[in-house]
Image 1 (cartoon, one colour):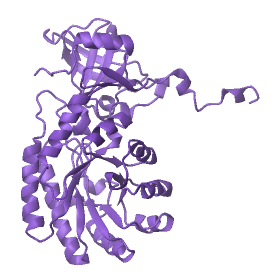
Image 2: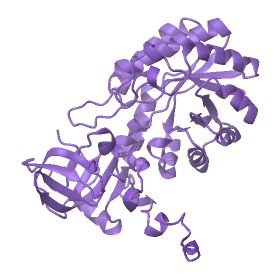
Image 3: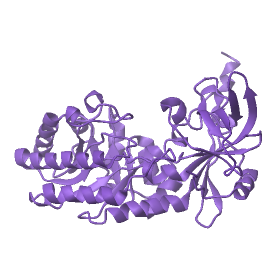
Image 4: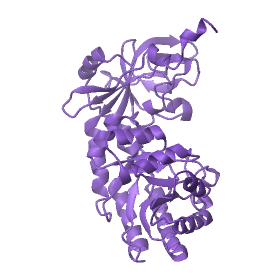
Length: 419
């Protein structure tokens, strides 16, 4: 199945004249449309649905500002991510701070911003109290263990480092109530990049059941229920995207049955999706620079695993389009590779593609989440620029490419003379 691109070959050639490859390109129109679709699907939620965009997926302030305009908050897990949220004008309960093994100064920043602090372990309650204090509004992350299956990326919940057990979370609410907390949230995250709607319905039912248990055993009302993120995207052309309206319908049915009928209404439903919001609307733009034929056929490009590590790290599939050759039969089989001194530096292995010549523009799809964000500098590789394709067809650089001076910025060469 042919993938539709939000730009033409002529547009891309003009863009490359201004911004040399490789770079990540993001489609503003696509991001906004996906955000609006998510909110439309969950427009029934009491108090208003909220998605806290997972900043780790695409930590760029221009993207965060777009999503803020579309009603999203920020899901942060570190001090710099909190600062990014602050820089775009997010504050208070628009920020969700979900972290683990968290140093106290990061809790202090979350407290300063008035963020919803989400604790990861029962021992973090006295730690937070000692270093920051117990906020009036507090949340905890639930790990259901063997009650819930994970998936390939998250793994088995009982082996995960995240979250409270059921017994711990009941005790946690009791402790927090005694220490003065007044408002409470509940969170879990048990799958990542999942396309099966059943997982999310099961997760919702699991949390709704726990909300009832907490009320019965501790007398605490859960004000908001964070179903986590994890909605996947169809990286492969034969995969179907999650039907957000069907997902919403099934979660609403569970909500009506387990929350409304038990008198636990109106608990707000929130999520923290990142990948599904921006992932399909990002592209790594690179050029073919070498052809190699040894035991296999290789196409060498000017990007490498430092620009997109998911294929090398996970064996993840990312679709590839050769611009201008969309209708040419895929008559060749290539490994598409970068220049890193690692044999896993491959964007595709044994991929059927049209014949590729040096100079061809290669588009690697679905890099709008965990693409540039997971970049690194091994081998002295410099991280690429990020370009935003605006709704009017213009393009703006929202992060310049690193330079050699950037790479050496934390070194003091002057000390070498007397070393």
